[in-house]
Image (cartoon, rainbow, N blue to C red; front, side):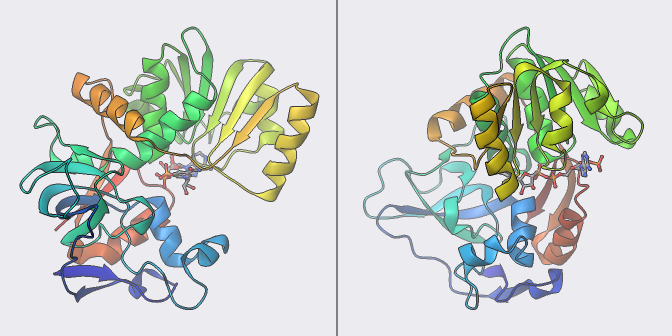
Length: 317
Ligand SMILES: NC(=O)c1ccc[n+]([C@@H]2O[C@H](COP(=O)([O-])OP(=O)(O)OC[C@H]3O[C@@H](n4cnc5c(N)ncnc54)[C@H](OP(=O)(O)O)[C@@H]3O)[C@@H](O)[C@H]2O)c1
């Protein structure tokens, strides 16, 4: 089969299509013929080895994972001896888990991971773009227990996590304010935001005591500034993680003036079922910026790395 392989960190050119053996399922795995995958911000960061912590995770010298791609939609091609959940021919979608590998014609994934039957009404391109961004947004909004009547601000509302966060916060009944650049204002409004702020024209951190929750879905807002916009005991959520945030989070837990939550999301199959239900009901829809062929993997990486994709980039075989 063809797979997009990289064996060293670097520019998009380190990723190349190579002919490799098709994966054989372990006892608890299924092998999926990939009909669609995505190139996420996590994929380009793992390719580039940025930040440095990624190199500790994926190997300083010899890479542990050489095929990227963390979410997929496709058809079960083979099942391991112990698999009871799926059979050959089932349409499935989900995340690969830590193993990655969806930037290939076939991927092996644990059958008991974040994988489910794909509803007929959701085409492969959309199904592939749902799991990572939507599960991350759901995880963070749940940390803050976002609910009806709250004022919630989503910073970075035009990215993958941001587009899902706007839709989910709206679904939970919150009054949603989205922050994005001017070019994205109108379509981000159509996701359900009551108000959209163009960050190039207006600084939301100047609004004193306005929000119950501020979710930095792109990791580019500063907590020190953003907290001005939080109400007393308001919650600041961020997808970013660094030592400074850990220190500030300890400080805020002592003063109790605000709550700062910086974490790595922990997706569950139950949450994935919630996401699937919402997608089937039409309350959650993936935003797809562009579709690339697997043979265009370097262009897709380059696009993702700009940090300005709109929602998701889909990869077709
Ligand atoms: N902690 C976790 O568990 C977890 C899980 C998944 C992802 N992440 C991290 O979450 C981050 C977001 O992921 P993603 O896939 O959603 O990113 P993404 O899709 O690459 O984000 C792109 C969007 O960010 C917006 N943006 C760029 N600079 C901005 C700025 N200064 N202010 C406001 N918006 C800005 C862009 O809008 P404009 O073009 O309008 O600027 C663009 O639409 C990544 O850093 C990823 O590594 C963390």
